[in-house]
Image (cartoon, rainbow, N blue to C red):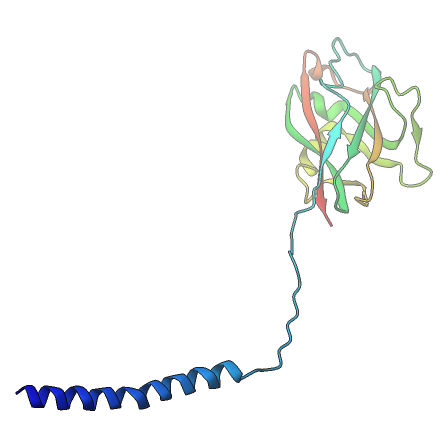
Length: 197
């Protein structure tokens, strides 16, 4: 039994040598192998969304006109500023219209765009071309122009820098307003909306 063990040990000893040579040869062959390589990288890509942004200089309603009679008139100016980074189209439309005694049908409205500042329109200058935005009754505006899709085109900011437009809104209670409009009321919101182009 001891002889078999010695013989087995001797045989195992010699068997290890070829295995070790085989492993070391594999390691050497891997270490001595070299390859040509080339890489190219495009570093840190980033994305950020542009903006479409409008503000106006009026903190409250432009008009709170009372005791109107046929022929009564008035006007105010409002400046709308685009400070977004994208080119856009700006449209004007009416929101939340309400009327009683059909008064809105007898209020004539004109909206003109230009330059200048101040609600009293003292520095307002109409654009040389394209100054007329709307001319008609308040009722017609409130019915036909109620969202961006059917809104009144005003201007197209480029997005390259802050841009402003001033709008002069003039109302007149039609001289032919019927007696039925007495005591009537009318209200509407003016909304300017920009959508990137």
